[in-house]
Image (tube, rainbow, N blue to C red; front, side, top):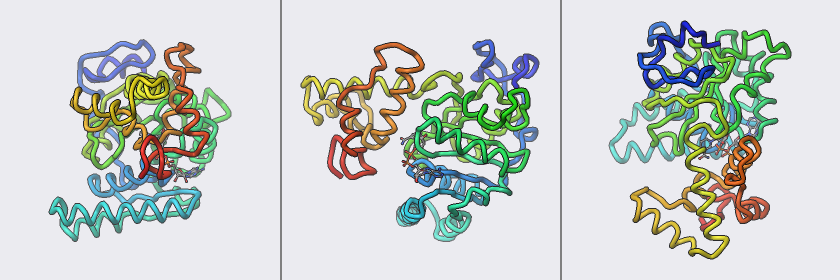
Length: 324
Ligand code: NAD
């Protein structure tokens, strides 16, 4: 739990979640006081999980065990990691020996029991609340009692996920180690990471997660534990509105993307971005915003629902607003 004393010395950009006020000093716990992460686990070898594992191995130079229930996802993810590493070697951004070392630090498994020796685990399974909870209950048992239990959720309450680690809500031994490290896609490229503490999260968990994200070369920002946090509270209604524009014939997909790309200087338009994120993930986030905040402005567009019903999930399924 972040006590008021711990909060008094939290940083300028760090927020006390209980009183929802920002303070103006540096984090209470320095990098020396924050627990050191020597081994990482990642649950979910999709586009985010693999990106997190590869970046941690390459930048923080820690061994990473990647867990997925699907051997096919693991094979696909590791093949993608190989491709990214060899591309960076070709572009002379990385030496062959550093690429080989980064690759050797990555191991895969289909058994969560293999996370018994990690100092931190980052969960990146699909954005389904019951699935996330079903991962955190065993994680609290399998991982060592000091391990940080992080989630990459885009929108789901960290407090709710933390509560799944115990049957006794007064026992904070596991729930105080739960936090969100919300990496952005693609993880090896995007600098920002959103850190979200739940009601139960301890100050040392927060400091350790922030320090580890910095070791991964990221720039952490903190948001309060509210639906969609900051990044998706802002981004998803923008994407959803672009889909509503398509659905109501305000413009063709190419024109919607072109005007936003060339008119607001973003690297890609909202529909292409939605395809890259995954339309199932976009819908899941809109559903959380709509159901939790109760405002009709967050209603997911009919077209977005239809696309997901059709199995057109974007780049990862070969078809979304565009064909890949
Ligand atoms: P994804 O669909 O690409 O990958 C999910 C992976 O989880 C799959 O490989 C699947 O086999 C695996 N999985 C499913 N059930 C599992 C289980 N019980 N145990 C272990 N593995 C399991 O999804 P993604 O886009 O990588 O998203 C993962 C998380 O990251 C979601 O919470 C999402 O909201 C969040 N996120 C996504 C993006 C994005 O742009 N896609 C950005 C930030 C955060």
